[in-house]
Length: 189
Ligand SMILES: Cc1cc2nc3c(=O)[nH]c(=O)nc-3n(C[C@H](O)[C@H](O)[C@H](O)COP(=O)(O)O)c2cc1C
Image (cartoon, rainbow, N blue to C red; front, side):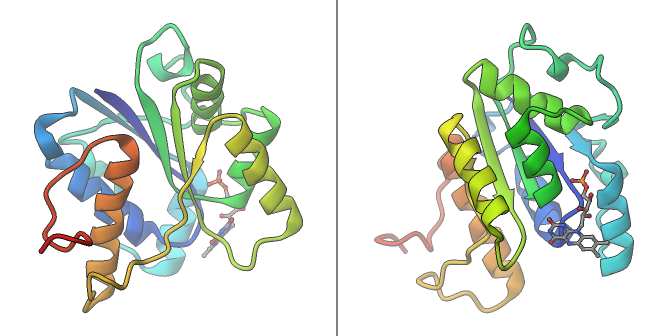
């Protein structure tokens, strides 16, 4: 499978970091190519939150693409890839995607996913949501996207934020159609 991971400037770059670490291990041996696009504003949030998220750390395992590179393969529907996960997805990027206003490669790739009926999985980060946020998410859902906010599970008895983020990453893989063994799943363990 070929998947794109988009990272935008919403709070929670630690979550993106965890998900990328999980993906880099190529769970289930399912991933043939992985692309990573990080928005310019994600860098500002990283600095403000004191997160150690650095896209260059993922050069091994991911093909790093500039958010300004509209000539990248994933900017075209003719390049066969399976889908994109945007984690975290800022409200301004959601607005751009919901209106088809592609200001960067992440928005353009989302547009490609929707027009080509490929998977688009969005991990929105904001609270509380305004009516505009909710309407944008509804619009995106109607256009085929999955809206998967980081809402931690508690039945797996997490002992740390790391536990919560790791389990969420496994659930995100489930949404992508990749099921890896995890002893803390409900009914297992
Ligand atoms: C420290 C910090 C935290 C932010 N957190 C959020 C957030 O949780 N959700 C959100 O939608 N925007 C948040 N923003 C605002 C976005 O960064 C801003 O809307 C930006 O335009 C997003 O651009 P991008 O989607 O291209 O990365 C935050 C900004 C900063 C500096």
